[in-house]
Amino acid sequence: MSRIEVKKPSLCTNEPFSTESVSRSLSVLSEIVKSCYGRSGRLKQLHNGMGGYVCTTSQSCVLLGGLSVTHPVLKLLTASVQNHKSRFSDCGLFTAILCCSLVENFRRLNLVSCTVIKISKHLLSLCTDYLKSEACGCRISVDFNSTKTLLCLVRSILTSKPACMLNKKEADYISTLILKAFLLTIPHNVETNVALGKCIIVPVKDKRVADSNLFPGLLIEIPEFEFPKFPVKRVSSSTIKMALFCISMSGDFLGAREGTVMVKHGVSLDSAILDQLLNLSKQMVNDGVGLVVCQKVIHPALKQYLKEQRVITVDRVGIAMMEPLSQMTGSQPIASLHSLSSSCYGSLKDLRTETFASKEFLHLIPHDTLVCSLILCNRNETAWGELKLACETAEHVLLLTVKQPLALLGGGCTETHLASYIRHKSFDMCSSTFKDLCCSPAEYQIVSDAFCCSVESVACCLEHDGGEILIDRHYGHFWSVESGFPSDSDWSNLVLKCGCGICNNQQNLNWCVLQRQCGRFAPKSCYNETCVNSKDDLVLDCFTAKYNGLQVAVETANLILEVSCIIEDQN
Image (cartoon, rainbow, N blue to C red; front, side, top):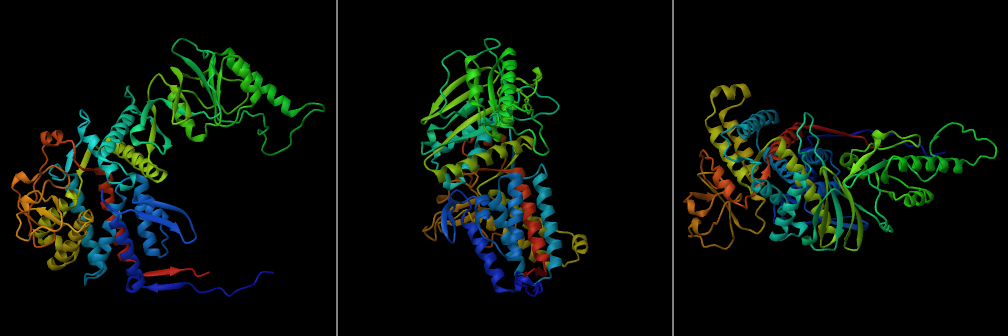
């Protein structure tokens, strides 16, 4: 009999942020995400207390997933960021840094939480309205007639992940491959319901990044498989009929999960199933099938029979390959061993073998390229894992950009520009706004300054080497200066170009140190279509991801400020 214990009462904590441990934990989390931000961000190594696998990363999805967060408030914060990341793939660190900064800055204000929350919601609406307006000076339109902006968008994502260990040439090459792969997945014929294809990433580790390559169609690794010497059975010179099975063809009796199976005396169940498989094979041969692909296992006798009939068999492809195979060939996954319908077959244009880094691949070449295979190489397993995540993020960002063809200026310029706009806008608020928010002009200004400082603090995290951060009073862009410059230096002699790369030091801009009495000014737009299209090295951010990240950060910070009591079950 188990030991009976008295049930413990729930632990109730009032004003959780009044305890030093919570504030310290939030500060630690804030420093962790801040130090990872940007292309020169510092890497983090994660491992459990018992040792084991060590993960090296600076990406928010891996970082937050590997951290052990115990306090409910921090769990809420990390869960919000992870949910944003799962939906939009990008701007996870931006969201986490901004949320932490807002919570820390708002807590320092000597104002009641409800007043701070009302004002911050109003400031968020000013930000979102501005970002959506045509007058927005920190966003650009993406022209799909040119690949320059799209390449800049992909390259900005790859170069912001230092654990990928890419130099400029490698980043340019992988960016080009990712963009080509994405364009291959867009159907040529636009219909009412457009479905994009899929890019399959094939891992090849311990090889040069320059060895990466893109293949239209699908590559299936075929270990211990020798491509037959006989010509593949074809319907025509450019068509190979294919059958795709999603059930086991090994001869095991898996049809009846429950119930009783009646078998006549002297009848072998295994032989009966094998006979059924052979009859199915004969039908496929008569129908002109040249390729049989199975998600699971094909019986050796079945393979031998089909080989004699000049039919190629590939098994154990796995469930992940089923959707792209069906989409690429038009075949319907077969889930029965009974008579087949001709409508379930698909077709291919050709079959080839490809050898890459001592691996053999069967290359399925479709008639219409909606599926492609990206052989992705990198120096080691850690760098390859980070590069794979970055490529998947870039692919998702391109999809989001197709839906909303806009991009935001990167390199900290959007943050500094937006903060300058809010400072200028909040200074001229009418009295009716203060009445609606139930606050005084002084309270509104205090919260506005804390809000703008939080947004600017995200840009400040891009500098990790002790340099000075400047902002120009014309466009409100981010500029970085290396440390160790003379105090009487002219800023124009120290800066080269702004964070996003659009502005340079030849424009005679009026610079000042960020967050040091720069004054209020209305930042102007520097967007010029000719200027943007002429630059090959712009730093850009996904509009949809950062727009949503801004909302998530502010709303989560407001939610955390509203927490006045935490009840935890101690049993």
